[in-house]
Amino acid sequence: MSVIEEERVRGGVFKDINAEDEDQQPTVIESLCMNCYENGSTRLLLTKIPFFKEIIISSFTCPHCNWTNTEIQSAGRIQEQGVLYTLQVKTKEDMNREVVKSDSASTRIPQLDFEIPAFTQNGSLSTIEGLLDRAVAGLEQDQPIRKATDPVVAEKIEEFIQRFKKLKEVEEEFTLIIDDSSGNSFIENPFAPEKDMALTVTHYKRTPEHNAALGIEVEEEENDEKPGSDLDTMRNEVLVFNTNCPECNAPANTNMKLVQIQHFKEVIIMATNCDSCRHRTNEVKSGGATEELGTRITLHLTDPSDMSRDLLKSETCSVLIPELEFELGMAALGGKFTTLEGLLKDIKDLIVSKKPFMCGDSSTADRAEKLELFGQKIDKIIAGEMDVHIILDDPAGNSYLQNVYAPDPDPEMKIEKYTRTFEQNEDLGLNDMKTEGYAEK
Image 1 (cartoon, rainbow, N blue to C red):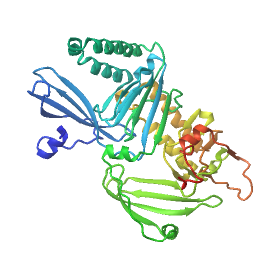
Image 2: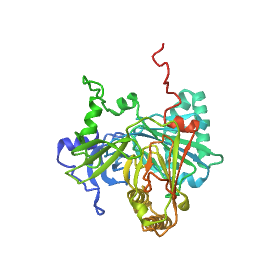
Image 3: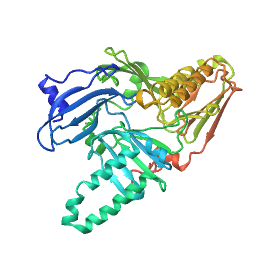
């Protein structure tokens, strides 16, 4: 049982902490030192990293043996998808990138054939250099004993430690991979809101093994109804089912409806409203199959009325604004059925308001000014004061932008169909999909 759980059970010392209170003070708890078994003190602080909900930072110090330990624990929910960060470390400046690493995340450096498996370390809030220092400290911990009992192994580990220390000087490029099935880890993009060419972020669906490791039980419900009955029900009425609020985790209701978009296809719209914290969210899922060709939609904004165009952005769709050198990745913002104005406001909210490490002590004047300028440009686009192009690039072909001239062609909108690359098919899980003769042995 963790310190936090023990205090909740006792119900005496631990008190509620408001994550929005800027003047909050840490809660101090008397705790047992696991090094000398005397009493030390643990300081707990509940803080909020935008986009990653709430985390609990705990710091233990022992006045008897001077042993210290700092860790973080996630206080938020497990995300709907896992996340894989791949960073090409090329300069010493990259070592200063801040990192949120949850306890369910694994860390790999392929050049050293080195891996820290998931659930073998506590969560941490650090930098790339801090992660390497922590790994080196773990390897050096038992070196004196190894040198006495097994000098050969100790020598090999010492050589490995020296290779690790050379990475800190970035004498040559290396790759850092953080794979978190809970989706609660993060590597900073210092160039935000611009795309980070050295950092690749991939979201993926968890396997049953991932769910079991995270303690998530996925129930398989038996359905004895006739085929097609569920689809007919979704077309004719709004389905309501119980769920939990993604913000406060209180019980909430989610409404689901199958909707036919004119001149396009059927989509599933889901909306969740929380009566406790007033949080509202909506999500769109494609009601059809992946198209044979990808779709790229380019709209030249020429009038403020363009902001009222209906827009469907699927989970696989990227959004580009070339004039701002801006690109929003596939899984960001999820699936949405909104207007062009609504999409731009969501982008501004995500980049300017909810960007991790862009507020408080982690923020710098240059970054804050850069993000503020980006927000002002988005406002100008919404007001029709900037001549820009909006590009929706969906390799699955399940995104849509309203043609206000339909059924005639839109002179300001270009729709291109293209053949997906191998990498795009791999991201969509199509390369290993067998669609013919799958019943054959």
